[in-house]
Length: 230
Image 1 (cartoon, rainbow, N blue to C red):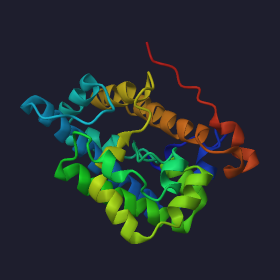
Image 2 (image 1 turned 135 degrees about the horizontal axis):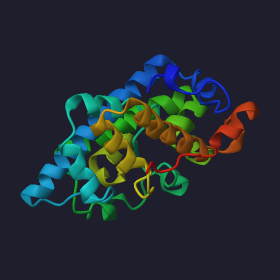
Image 3 (image 1 turned 60 degrees about the horizontal axis):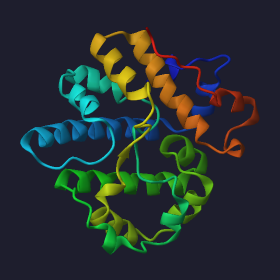
Image 4 (image 1 turned 90 degrees about the horizontal axis):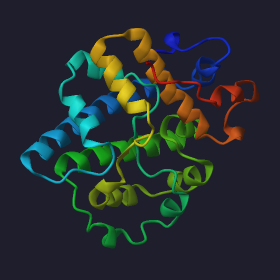
């Protein structure tokens, strides 16, 4: 969702996201696309009888398999990440890996997940080094997590990537509208409705950010106003 399709007036999302460098926004788009492809692969694994990671309902994941490549590309344009890496849990990241061995007992962690988690973690580390605001808006990384994550040594990131594929979760998986509306409008080719569904993701991202992280004149943009289309 290019910034020129975000509302310029009352919503205030475009000015608040504008300071984020275009290169970072493009990398988010690429990661979103890779994540969508990973979800499609998970659906194929379900069909083949393999374990699937927790997160989206199977029906929603199944919808992804019917979408054309062009629709996946449009969904990937969401200006914020479509996935989360447990960044809301500051205590986990501040713990420096305590308990990671026990957590490896999780039942999924295919090569694709581990590879994506590694890429996403290193991207998040790079963002955390460069901009706290970008980390909060793009990655749902609160201030306490940002401090802990920013100071992690690179070797520790390698360890997380190797043994913690279960960190990867879809963002807003339990929201009644976000994923169903996103996939449905992309399948229908309704650009205006798709933009509204993508905008909901931006609104939800703003609700996850501490007020101090958003300039005061944009703070009112954080209240979602999206309603399910009938």
